[in-house]
Length: 141
Image (cartoon, rainbow, N blue to C red; front, side, top):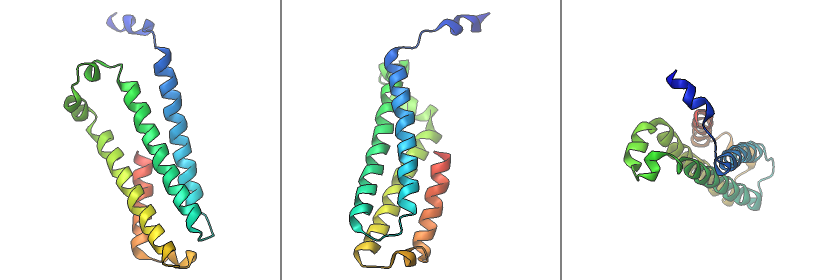
C-alpha cells in the first residue's frame, strides 16, 4: 500500500521539458560523434566544428540533467557530495566521457593540422586506442 501513493505523483512541466531536451542532446551527441568518425575529408574546419558542436551538446546534456535534478531534495538542500556519492558511477562516466571526447578530438585535430593523411590517422595506434576507449565509454555513458 505504501507504493500506491507514488503512482499519483505529478511531474512538473519543467521536468518533462528538461528530460526531452536531455534526450535530444544525447541523440545529437551520438549523431555528431557518428558523423565525425566517418568523414573522409581531412578539412580542419569540419573537424573543429564537429568538436565544438559535440562539446556543446555534451554541456547541454549536463545542464539539462542538472535542471532535472534541481527538483530533488538533495539538490534543493545543496547536498551535492551526497548526490555525487549516490550517483558516483554516472558522475565518473560523465567526466570520463568528456575527457575522452577532448583527448580524441584534439589528437585528431593535431594530426589534421600536421597535414597527416586522413586514412593514415586510423593507422595510428594511439588514435585507434583512444577511439576504441571513447566508444566503450560512450556506450556506458
